[in-house]
Length: 274
Image (cartoon, rainbow, N blue to C red; front, side):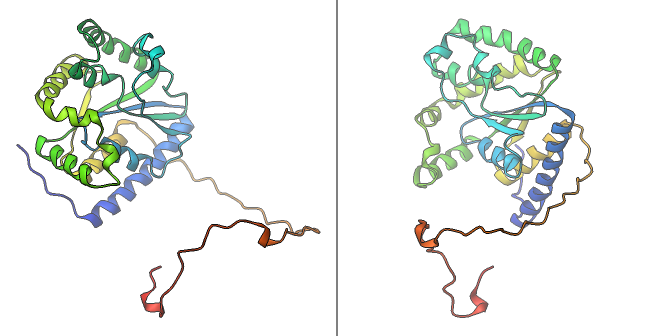
């Protein structure tokens, strides 16, 4: 089994900033060329999909790059064609959509937890490659990532979520149930790959035991999947403000202000943090 060292924090921060600058350039190219991009993030619970998505979108325009993370299907959605609830979230020209879990729920959690029957499951595996070929033929760029995490690291992250009040919401009842079904999820993943890891729509596996490394590796790879160019910067001219002509502001004491609790309370300039 491969072992890797965690990259230093300073290098991680500098490289992340560089990659996010490139993502901004990619975003401008997608908008300029009217591209339609779909990026799927799948993997085990606590594998680090959400953290990577946050770093991708952190400095991007949410009107161009948006995240889709669906709840469990409603009663109406359960009666629809399986892919229907996902189709309405696909991108228009000039958009990139990141799916935080996707139609592959059927081959993963639904299969393992018994939320679909055998007929529905096998129909999905037969239909999915055709569905994805249909998307790519329509002009959509489809990129699929599987975040792989070891059982030991997943358990460590589960325990961290259990005791950390700001992370506890991440530990859902489904996550807890999945701890007992590691092997079942492994079998489901292997079977899913055997049907859907195709030449036109391959799976890219992200080794995710080390979060910093995984985020940079994934973002760097994403940038290589869509050929783009740096567009010339458009010079922005800010007009001068017009001088007020007879405008009188209302009394300031008629407004309600947020209490100004955080302010400089230091005795000397040396202790101030800018």
